[in-house]
Length: 235
Image 1: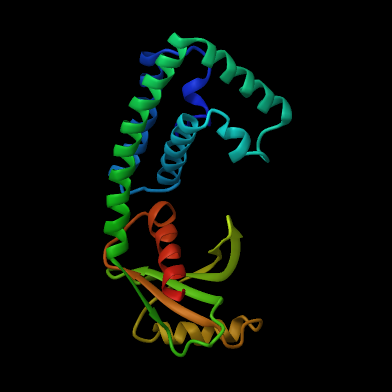
Image 2 (image 1 turned 90 degrees about the vertical axis):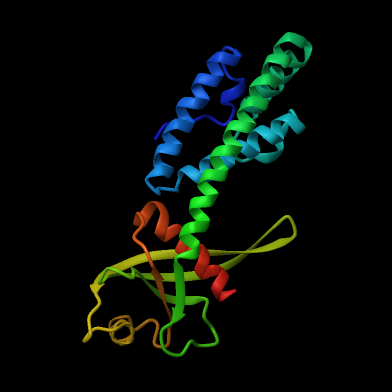
């Protein structure tokens, strides 16, 4: 996958046509993956770059505030020097603003394409509890499959809560366990019983079945969207 650095638009030679070519080459690959219904990590990456551009435009020292743990003191000092040089050069700043303006529009369009696919996949996902769900459902298992297939992926999950900017967020951590074949003799209820017998550490787990009406790439699309849907469902 083609990648862009955090400050690709302000690195090296600041030239509109050069940066335009760099951006379009990157977005071409992102959209190619979107056309194959492969959303991640591309969708998260383009969203990251869009917010980077917005923050740079709004605050020239955004990197120092946004990524203090990722940048060393020397890097921050070099960036501040770069900003000062740009501010003093009206022609350079105008070129940079043209690059940022163009890039924002192009990246926003790509994000919209990815978001439409995300919403389409989300609409095809259904979640149902398997058997009784305990009061403590922050830990358990989920089955992931498509309606047309018999193959079922089994995952362990654990929810956690973290705070950011005085707001609480839920995060989900998952671990792949195995793959089972669904059949009349091996229903989701039977799978749950087997899990309880094999995984003694969770004698009364919460178990959910997540099923997609259509087939999508597992790692790049179905699994990340299913995880987000499960967090919302449980919450």
